[in-house]
Length: 414
Image (cartoon, rainbow, N blue to C red; front, side):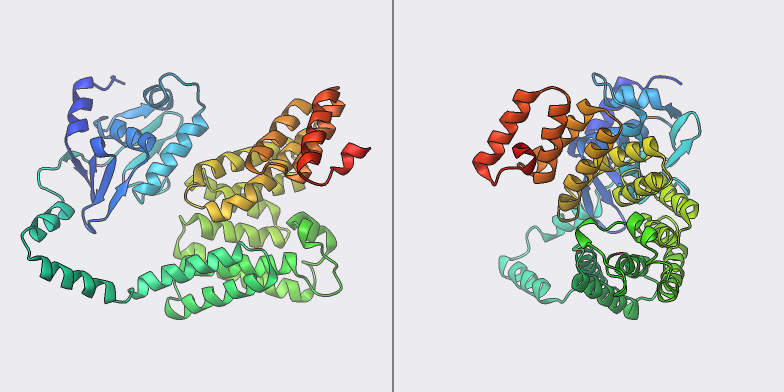
């Protein structure tokens, strides 16, 4: 494959280019949808990757080449490139299974398959701004007031309702979970084909059965997990089986409605998991991750299934991938990722303890304490690991620092 010329690179830096329904301006990291006039600001690395693709003239670009172009002075793995490609696809509303722009060439790399041409005409956003110049200020004020008084469209209301439902689902308490189901079902009364709402109902039904089973099962919600729910038998009662069958039908509908939606695939995987169909669940989670390598919910659930299968190395590596995906997605979902990431970090640290790798156990416990200083469980893991490693002075220093701020750690008194 020929190396891309510096001359072309400079031209694209200064000139907007057009492909499909998009106009891209590399100098501004801006991506304009020409059919809706909406503007997206790309992260610099994603903009760099798109620029490289647009310069490629349809050539297959190897992974090594792309890594060298995007991270010339840094050592990164192919997983980092895969995540960046996935995020660019997401920005372009593209998919790996039915690509409109970025095609994966097995064992070779990637190819940009859409024709690219200079954007000879100003985009719709520019035109609309030009038209407004010169309009009397009084008219502009009246137009602004009218715009503010116009109610949200039905679509906007649905999106707001879905966001509220998603946030309630992630609260992990029974009342919020039931409220989430009610909101998802309200959306379905308006739009029965809404894959996100169907996936939400399926997820919330499974969560209800896992976290709040019938009275004969005593569940400590602070330590609840799918693994414990399966072991207890609470998911095998006649009532639970009926509810899970309903959830499966709803999740399958969501996947039919939107086969490339990672949330729909995750919901079906979650249902399969609760039904004990572990291999089918793993397949759905892998499908979701192939579409979006930063699908952290699917990665967490997949890691738990590997653990359930006693595949400790696969489980640990998948949990680490989930943690890194959370880092990438945090700015988009801080309210969802914030509570989960420290918990996942503790799971990873504990996994390293089980493997006898005290150095990595300490490293991950310290990661958690960076996110949540003085987190009690992570501090305990770190103190115990330091002691086992013979680092008594460091262990005592941590105990003293903790006691100076909060009630002493129990392990420090032993």
